[in-house]
Image (cartoon, rainbow, N blue to C red):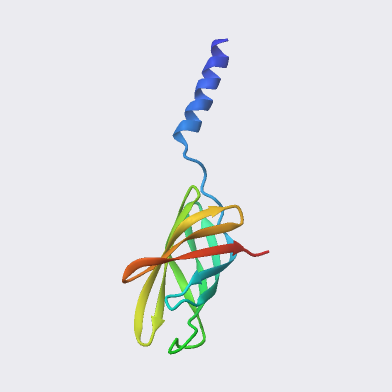
Length: 132
């Protein structure tokens, strides 16, 4: 009986101490963000995950007037996962300037949602769906 109580105590202790494994974000995601001028921006995010570290690329296209045209492949930096929360940064080159876009959000199965914040603060909501 003492051994059973010890086993139950250890199991409960592990459940309390462990906040939960990092969700798996590895794969290809289709991201939709409401643009600053009201238009919907889409991008493709390809992530690799090693434990709580995210790396990858985002193919991002600036559309609209003066948007700079074609797609850019941006490197994911500072990527982290903690349970179902994640964050990462991509640096966009635009008309000779570099702009950090900071993404943070949560994952729920094959869907993600969160906020993309630029250098002026604030933020725009984004959603994502895992492909394949």
